[in-house]
Length: 263
Image (cartoon, rainbow, N blue to C red; front, side, top):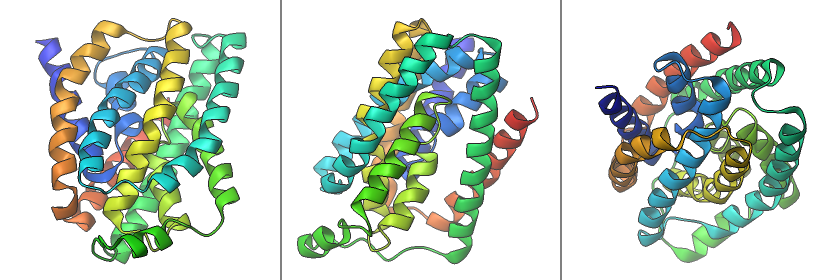
């Protein structure tokens, strides 16, 4: 019966990731900790590989729809991957299961979720972005962003947050992309966020696996639900009421963030 619960949780999170780009670490990690009683360091490590495989499936679907702006993916990865490597080196030195590190993981995750919830609620109140533009010249111009080096720097911050509390690739990444690429339509924002998270969460997840902080049977059970979920979500991403989803998700993230901060 418990396995069915994990499969269902994976499906719901996969669906939300496909629709919004948010949900890998920001939803799955708190779900594993609060609802299933998984220790924080195991929840983080398992969730990272869960996000890598889940978002790889979503990226394939989005790439076939020609929604992935690869220039944005490459710029963010230039900052996030080195930062993830440095964070893993530090975790290897101090040990991911030590009480201090686990407290740092839960507190950092909580703060990140609260900030993300606020950003998503503000965006929901401001209303939807411009409709999807498929003109290649317009898309090329929109992916130039405001400052490539700022994108690399914020990518590094996300790499740190993803590797430590497993949140950032989707939750903070979407907010960062909305600020850096204001002319990029929301479906392309979501697509770039999902695509660049694949190498980042894979590197971070494999690093955690080498530290013994990944529960592989749990991982496979979650993926049994998440892969169909993200496929469905990525097919519906351009036809979803953005304001409603962002409002509901911001409330959920605020609840999870406050719980983690107060642990």
